[in-house]
Image (cartoon, rainbow, N blue to C red; front, side, top):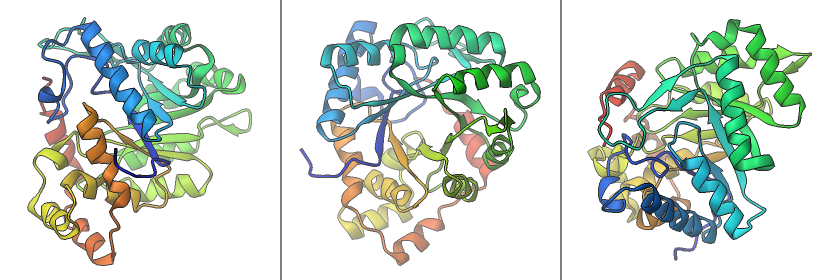
Length: 314
């Protein structure tokens, strides 16, 4: 086991709770036969390894296949009371455990979807949900104009559940800024945000820094660009990694850890080896020269998200 502090890391279950996902570098790390039972056992092994290494935050979603079910079973069997759980609503998983299918998930931000999915989450996880997030909020989301949905969320907030949202797309910063302005009953509707920030796509950074300084908890997702920075790293990233005697994924994650506003950095390993490689980031200390070089990796957001949208489910 590597020696590392995992205080700022969280484990995301997107790559573990369903048989197909877009992450590269995932296929060979999963069970040969991705049955629900095999994936359940594999997920429990990764959760055990993450817990042993000090990770105490786990992030799921209704659309992550059986992720909530796997997590609920693991929590019940292990009895860990010190794990913070976050989940998300808004997408429904419709692939029915198929790897090859035309549609894997369907998005809907509505009162009906919230009520349905919150009931499903509660049935599995009970009162263990510490943060419930709108999945993939964009500036065009109907949530911003749906007062009934806003008030339904406020009732959930007032019952003691912390509310947040995740973002995606080239206009992440706009979504964060719009959500910051949402107030119900004189109190902000949200108090947490989960966004994509990585060496290729840092455009939301300023908005996240402002949210952090304003008291929100900031979670970073897709910190390895869905595995691309680990499996096919740009030469510049590989060069910085060689200089530090580290793997590209560790340096890419160290780049995220270097952002003081990043409260929880989610990693999405598909097995224990990837987990240990990811957590080695805590031992990488990037200096100003490193950060200046990594800043040169930035891509146009529209280009980045266009490439992500074209990634196949496998």
